Structures are given as structure tokens and as C-alpha cells.
Image 1 (cartoon, rainbow, N blue to C red):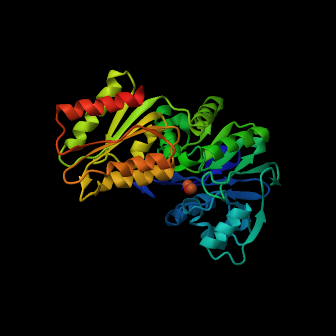
Image 2: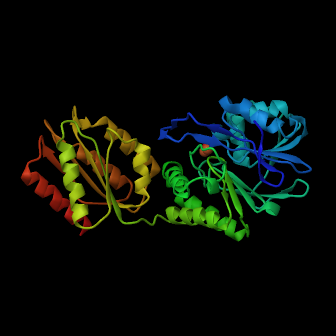
Image 3: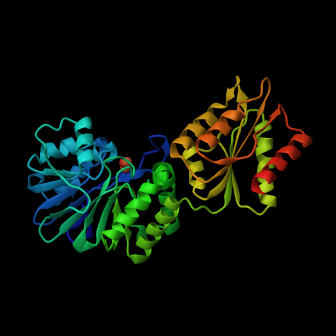
Length: 392
Ligand code: FEO
């Protein structure tokens, strides 16, 4: 378990969590990685930790390069426990090291761990730290996606250590994007953005603009999840994608999300989808019986139209639809047109709860549609007309 050199004397010392299937509600069928980096300069610097349960593996990689007693700085770019979980272990092994983080980072570390005896160096955007042949420059990126989030730029290597930004929940044999199918990595980066960073488009735009105003010349982006973007083409591709996703621009696509008990809502969903197909609008349909909410959210980045359908179970939203709405509302996608539909047996009305979510998100809407028990030809015609009204 050795470190892997990513730039001269800069090493990946992270871990691969091949078996991770779920990350706080986000389905991760491709696992993930927690990337730490060790900079072997005059003042040896470790950037970010890993999840506590994978600490031993990371420690082996660091020890393949140096002794912990020689580490002078431990940079904490983000305190969420996938990156800080083993920081207490690191600080036991390297009590002489200074923790470099921002004020919010210090406060979050103190709220998570017993930090007594830890020596902090607090930085803000634009501050630099000389570690020998290299100068590190810091950029705080608050709420991208936690208050403490920040990035570290290694000037001489034109290397941005971006933590969650530009990451992917994707474990693979290599650690570089160039060694993996590009589309697969990009799809995982898109999924990561949709499920983690979606609510923070304004903060992402601000970070991109701050990087520009600091004049950061970036040749490599090494995030703390997934593969490393290296070379102009890859770096520009991911920066361009982030600029687009953060701006809220979409591809004009339609997403139909629903669940079904006895097939009635499925019939309505099929009718809804057919209107988009007839109009030549790209459409994707997701049934929540078989799709995880995080798979569905990826399509929201491209969507202008969102149609959500539910059966009624004991006078309530169908539970998987309710769960999806809670997840989606938290991610707060903007600039959509919403349509709520569904079926009921005893009492109508649950579609109004879907409509309320759309309204809370500030979306345009058309009137909801619901049908008692099994939709017949008339109901199918009526719901199609409602969707035509939506796209008119
Ligand atoms: Fe990868 Fe916000 O932690």
C-alpha cells in the first residue's frame, strides 16, 4: 500500500471504498474514494484525511513515504467525516503538526472531536503558506457544500486540491480520469453535482469566479472523491460542466417520476410521457419502485419539465413518492415547470401536496390531475391535454 505520485513529490495517499453502496441517502453503485494527498516538500504537508474505518490503509500509504513525526502541516479542506474521520488518529501520530483550516473549519472540528492540544493555523481566501519549494494558496468556498469547505492551490504545480468540488463517487483501478472511459467519469461527476452540490449553484459560480480573480492557472484538479482531472482538455471539460450546471441552464428535457400500486399511475405516466415524445421533447421516465432517488436527480440537471405522479395510500402520498419529494426539495432545483398527477380510490387530494412542493420551489405549474381508480380513455385524453398546456 504505497502512495502514488500525481505530480513530482506530490502523492495520492487516499483509500478506495469499493463496497460503498450508499452515501447518506445517495446511492453509490460504483463505490467511492477518499483522496488524501501528501506533499513531500521541506515542510511535509498532508492534505485531508479519510473515513475513520479506512484509516489504517491511509496510514500505510503515508508511511510508505515518510514518518508521521516529520509532517509539519495537516490541511483540513472540509470537516465532513468522510475527510476528517481519521484526523484525530493523524493528530495522535503527528501531534507536532499544525492544522491549517479556516475559522468555520476550526469550529466544526471542535464540534466533532476533542481538539485539546491541537495547534491551529487559521486561513482565509488569498492567504498563502510557504512549505519550501512550493507556495500553497487557499480559497474558502463556504456552502460548497458546508460552511467550512475550502480548496488548496499548489502554485508551482498548477494543482488545485478541490476536496468535494469536481469529485465523483467512483472507485476504479486508476486514480486518473485519463485512464478511465471519459464519459463514465463525467456521468459520475454529474451525478455527484446533482446529489451533493445542486442547491449551491450560486456558491459554485462564486468559487469559479474567485478562482478566476485569484488568477489560478490550473493544470490538474485533484478532488477528494474519484479520479483526478489532468491536462487542459479534462480540466476545461469539468470546469465548463460546473459552470453550466451552476448556472441552472438546462437541455429542455422532460422527467416523469412516479410510483404505482395497481397500475393506474403507471398508465397516467405513460400518457404524460407520450405527449413529450409526440412533441419531439427528450423525455425520461423513472418508476421509483426500481429507481433510487439519486439516479433520478441526475436527469434534473437537464430538465425543464418535471412531472411527478403518485398513487394514494391511506389518504397519503405513496411513501416512495413522499421520500423522493423530500429528497428533491432539499436539493432545490430551480427554473422548472412542474406537473403533479396521480390516482386515488376513496378520496382525492394528495396531488396537492406535490403541487405545494413545486410552489415552494418557485416553479411554474399547471393544475394537477388525478383520476379515481383506473384511468379510461377519457382520463388519458384529459391528462394529455394538461401536459400539452404545460409545454405550449
Ligand atoms: Fe466528501 Fe462533504 O464530504
